[in-house]
Length: 387
Image (cartoon, rainbow, N blue to C red; front, side):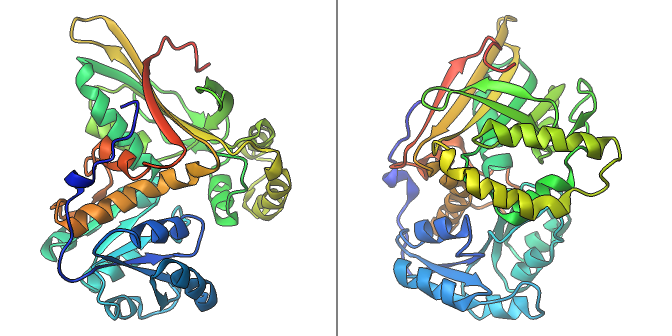
């Protein structure tokens, strides 16, 4: 697991009619990276979809993709999608924390598979309500094809056989200092200082952007501060691994000042002095843009598992991923690209509506990061590196 494998042979060869993939928000933060990668897959045809035809056309010309002018807020989405003749919709427009399942329903109405990059708990868990409909149409509707829960879940699945009993999982992500989108900041602020749903019987009440921990990543990333956040893993991992008693998720940005600011802001919200911090998203993004040049372009992720091995001895493992040169932006995109590749080649036969756990192996996701400044490794963990 310490290196990526170039596995072109196992990916299969595509033949016949092009497998069309419509990327909603295709010129956005993650959509652009997905379009670029999809356009390089033999037998696939990428569509850049969004409200701005000029931005879509510019990217499409650069990548050899096609353009779909579409506004998700307007009626007739299913008809617009159907007109492309494509087989799959990848929803990368976000944010997903406050969206309903209208886009997924429109994709199914158009006779298409559906994948999104959501990491909002309610949205990802809610995709199950479309299961019967997706099965009847012989289509896959999948939510959460991102760093969480797709990649984090794949890591836990890969390491679970080494444990006789798996008791706790702690997932952490630290992004680079690049300013997140305003919509992303608004989503984070929506649960800043507010109680997070319990993740298991061994976990007390946590609050958004509190509970600071410091994790020491491999060089050149080093130590980063992270804060408690809400993600689908807190519900999905205990459901998938019933012996788990503790699941925790922490996240942060590249500069410690971001974590300090988030932690300080969380207290007036928690104490009821600041009813709604969401309007601060714009000013916070402006500050983040000014500070971004101070970052090092590095980001990382860890999944720490603890329990007992098959001889009854305590076992702690820590899987870590480190990205340099801003290549960490590709990590949240890898699962959706892997799913598109496997659907196009016929290797993925799953149908129905479900969160993105158990659909991809760890290597399926990591293979999509081959050739980038991204590396992953596994080590035994004494617990001293996260405190």
